[in-house]
Image 1 (cartoon, rainbow, N blue to C red):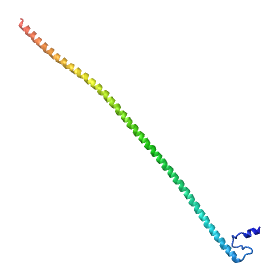
Image 2 (image 1 turned 30 degrees about the vertical axis):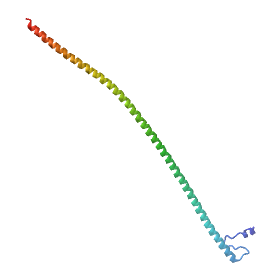
Image 3 (image 1 turned 30 degrees about the horizontal axis):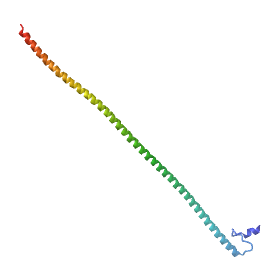
Image 4 (image 1 turned 120 degrees about the vertical axis):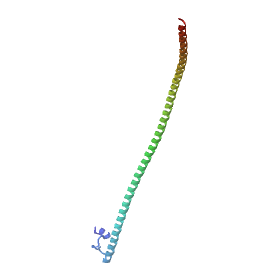
Length: 156
């Protein structure tokens, strides 16, 4: 088992490898330090990439949510526009029906008033004729009274 571990690069500067010179040990230590620094840089780079990836994921999810909200708003606006259009059509239709109904009632009332005015005109005409006849009768009675008075004075 010792043979297996001897072939691996050293991770500690305090333990020299068997069968190697001290200068090689320093080179190994420098190499190990370089690897550790490289590993640190690699880990930092991996952490940075992971962090960047997480930020990208969050940004992407936020963008998707904004798009969903905007889509919902667009759908709501379309629904409101459709509702407004239908409401306007219904109100216009009801106004037209009310206008037609009022015109029909106006015509009906106008016809009824016309009939009543005609009847009143006929009554007024008949009243005028009766008034004229009464005046003639009154004048005739006045003449008769005058004639009776003259006859009564002339007969003693």
